[in-house]
Amino acid sequence: MSDMKEKVVLITGASSGIGRATAEAFAAKGAHAVVAARRKEELDKLVTSIEAIGAKASAIKTDVSIAMDVEQMVEHTIEVFGGLDYAINNAGIEGKLNGITEITEDEWDQVLDINLKGIFLCMKYEAKAMLNLGHPGAIVNIGSVNSFLGFPTGSPYVTSKHGLIGLTSSVSAELGPQGIRVNLLCPGVTDTPMHHRLRGIVGDDLYDQGLLPKVHLQRAGLPEEIAKAIVFLCSNDSSYITGSTLIADGGFTLTL
Image (cartoon, rainbow, N blue to C red; front, side):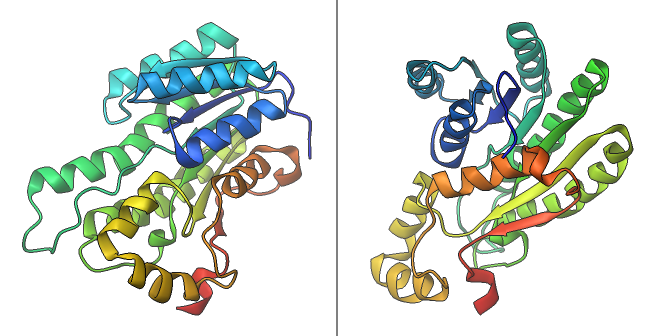
């Protein structure tokens, strides 16, 4: 895989799970990482961990649903490390699971604001910075198998993840001629805090006997495995891949 030494990566939703693992994966390859999320204490711990392996990192508290926060996040990246080569738009929430007749407008807006509008805002300012810097870059948005599949009581989450397919494809068509690649990575069942919360809701029996048997590999993925796919999509090894959706789900969607 191509050398990423001293490249600059910006990762949202980096305080735990896939985001944290992705920051660590880029740092292991020598990249400078800016990690962003709403939980600053967790970000500071991540920075300490990255610096312990001799890499450079900086944390900034960010709510991706707020345009000013996102703009400041990108400006911080340029100020601290002087560039922006890769952007990983990973921040997302599952929201409250509820039937369509019971979901409140506020609950709907919260999920869409973070999961869909948040990625729009991130790409808006990330692309502007990359274009101003005048060199190619790569953006990876994080979707889900629910970018294709619905499930009961999950309409806000599913809608937000479906929307990322169109958003990614459209922005790829716009930025591709200017050297910026944009792709969507869709993880399946992954051992993250979000999926532990899901397990708590559906129960161990349904999770172990109903969900996992549908995964060809018969297990949940690890955040580190998803991170490797993200790093690949940013590397020169994927130089002819843009506007695409890569599914990393252990074969889950093929059984449905």
